[in-house]
Image (tube, rainbow, N blue to C red; front, side):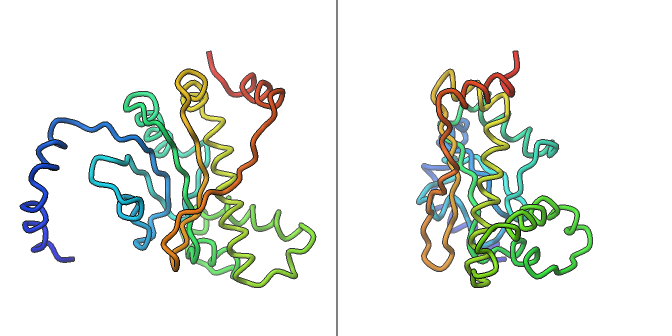
Length: 203
């Protein structure tokens, strides 16, 4: 790690740092993978202070994760971000581990939701005809869609959507192309939205 480069960077960004010292008001909450090749601020062309971030192995979201729930609450309820982006990526090590049934000790427990998704996909027609690359891409996308469903069941996010138009997006970052591609997570009809809200919006 080139810590010596930090001084040069700080000197070149003195105005930005002075502005950031006044506080933060990011417009985006980014929920992504810990992979070093997916630096959210860089790939979105942003600066420090633009994006509030939570990252974990394989960008897995589940309601019992207190860490990510705390991040969501702070970003949505207090920082009042305008968008929440859940982003997976191609060439994901967690996805590849699940497809190959590789053993990684403690990580095996963390990856269980992803393995469950893989199990569901193997029962779909046409799965076995997909190439390994296509299966990996499919699992990456389904993991994002599952995470978006978790997000849209979060009470703070539901409130923010209703009260101020918060946007929730699912996306996949293509590592070889450098592009973020939105994933269609399925828009609900009016009746389904109402039923969803009745189930998950808290008083």
